[in-house]
Image: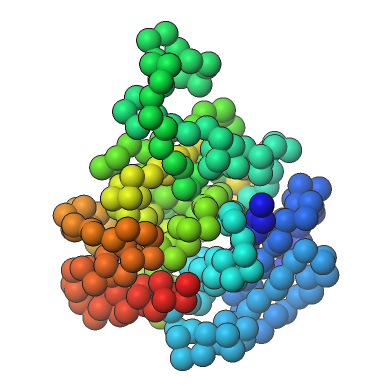
Length: 313
């Protein structure tokens, strides 16, 4: 099984710290570094690392390179594309200020993607072995994405950061399936997905060139969950926890999030109403792009970007 780890970064020293914290766990995993700068500005010397910047994005995607936004964490989409192109069976993405807590970090992600199938109709209410009354034979469903959570600094929005300064989280041992017909905020800080998901998992147009920021993974997660429900597969969340080291600027986050918060209140409801017919992730994603409500020019452009993305695969 080939595992690729995608890390977007713009801070040289932060990235070097990330490498130091993770190097003993990376083994032979491919690490794809997406530097959010016009050109590479620092050296990545380890043999398992592949290093890309805007220059490589523009060279490879040509006229379609605009679908990879800049000065935003959504640039990680290019890393998913390169991982898929390189034959990855699993893509794991991490932020550059997230560090391992457990030496079993990768093993735990793979456990939930491949080993611990969830029941299609029953949910166990504890992390213990089989509880009393849980049927011995229940249909198992496939998990295609597992979202690990965060110890130390939580992944709050700016307003919650402001209300709860200094709030911290402890690492825990639990994992849960997101039930069918329910949505959940999907964070890209610590996330593992199977290969077949990638054509339907694109981080939306965000950053200084667009009206919105910091909703790329949230809205990508809404789209992916809609497709997973249609195809009868699960997203799970919980462990493995990572240590989230750095709290981003509260006022910057509030400023960036304010326009998107308005859309976030109704986008999921409109997506929920869409009826899908596709039989695989790529076809469903293109169908979803076609059926997106064209609220304004941004969303018309977003629909075009989603279809270009799917056709890369």
